Length: 215
Image (cartoon, rainbow, N blue to C red; front, side, top):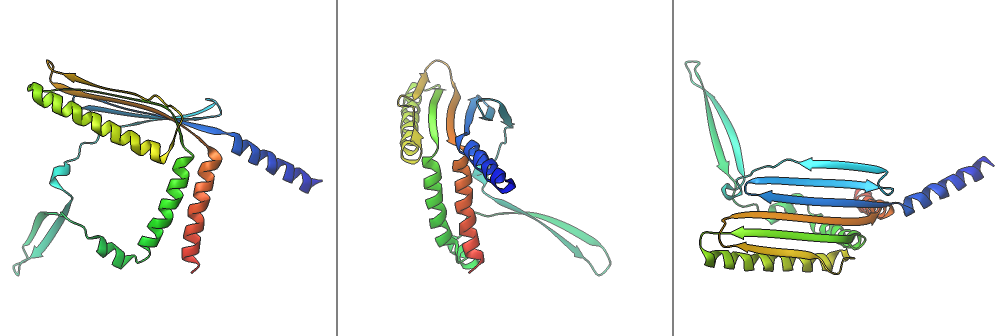
C-alpha cells in the first residue's frame, strides 16, 4: 500500500508540474540617458511571483576589451617600482578556442538543437514596442526613424521564426520628433511556457554533458 501511495503521489506531482504555466513579463524603458529594466516571473495564476529590477550599466564598447596588468620590479638598491598598463584586446580568434576545446563545434550543434526545441515552446502573448526619436536636422530624423522601422521588422521576423507568436497583431510604433531632439524606447513583452518544458530542456542538456563525460 505504501508503494502504491508513493506512485499515486508521484503521478499527481507530475501532473501538477505538467499543468503549471509560467508567465514572464519583460519591460525595458529608456528615456534620454536613463534605463529601466523590469522582469516579473509568476506561476499558478499569480500565487507565486518574482520581481527583479536590473540597474543601468554603462559600458564603453567603443574602447574594446581591456586587460589591466600590474608589473612590480626591484632595483639592486632594494627600491621597488610598480607599473600599471592597460592592454586592449581587439580580436579573439575562434580557432584558438577550438584548439583548447576541440568538442566545441559538436557541442554548439547540439545546443542549437535544444535551443530551437526550447524556443518553440515559448508563447508570446503580447508585444508592444514604441520608439520616439528626434534630431535637430529633419532629414536625419526621417532617416533614423526609417532605420528603426527596419530594425523592428527584423526583430519581429526573428521572433516569428524562433518562438510561437500567439499575438497576431503586435503593437509597434516609431514616432519621429522633428521639433524635439531626444530618444526614448519602451518595450513590453509577455511570454507563457510550461514548467515541464523547462525541465525537459534541462534534461536534454544534462544528457549532452553526461554523454561527453562518459566517453
